[in-house]
Image 1 (cartoon, helix red, strand yellow):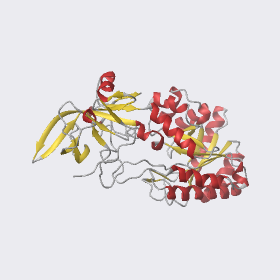
Image 2 (cartoon, helix red, strand yellow):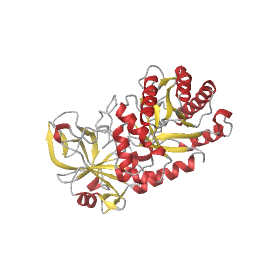
Image 3 (cartoon, helix red, strand yellow):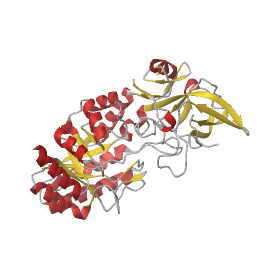
Length: 408
């Protein structure tokens, strides 16, 4: 038997079923007209942001990285909750524009921006977090051709990393950002060429659950930004301090202590150096803001026993839930929080494997989990599905296509 990950607090049963936004799973599926279905809770989005605002210093801006979830109704909700948005492609820029997001609130990171993407961003007035000297030069040339002044920040590859992060994006040789020792010269080049100087972006990693590690990294980021600002010789208008805030996915994971992080930042902000005193300071979060708001609902289409092992075969799978299947950066596969949504308040009584409909042994949603006895037609819920589900899974694999999505 393998333990399941912790179901986020606040989910309850109504008439024995999992309820989201006050509606049962079966009602939500009936409204959508099909499974698989992603359901996102507006109330959970608002509560997460309220809790975060209360914990963080008043002057700290909070940006949403839309790569975590780019569902248009969700983006429109987030527009009223966060201070800015971070995108990572021209496609995400188009999604942001379709949702009516203000381009002046958007910054664009990513190590392989094509000229057509740079052109669209410059024309829209988006800030470019440039990741190389070549990218700065291309942005300047495109701006001159368009007759538009590019808004340029530099993404820094620092010498340190975020300890314990799920994906390390800073420290040592990386495709992301500009090595810190090269930043001052490239920044001066952009400023001298007439670009609108928008500051620095220092992102070191993601999915960390240690407040101590995040506090240490944020302190290192502030110290590095202070030093680089002095070497650049120009005031720093903005510092994107990155993110890294994680959520519990697996058995034994504990929620991040955001109060400790906020207290440490408050102390640092009370003693900022002159170089950062007037800067707009912000963090960039994705999964922490939206991950626990989402539930993936998939229907059991077959129940079978093979060599004494029970399999619950669903109409969903890794093509919508790549991370839950263990194929999105996980070294050792562990179970996400999973439940039988149709029998949410029932007692676990059997060990079962929940698998998807794809013709590959990689398509697993839960291994050897203790669950209520489920039958064909029951709904399975995969929690923590609000981030990197629909936006990061290979929905076209085997011609399956995307899941339905709904905001309630």
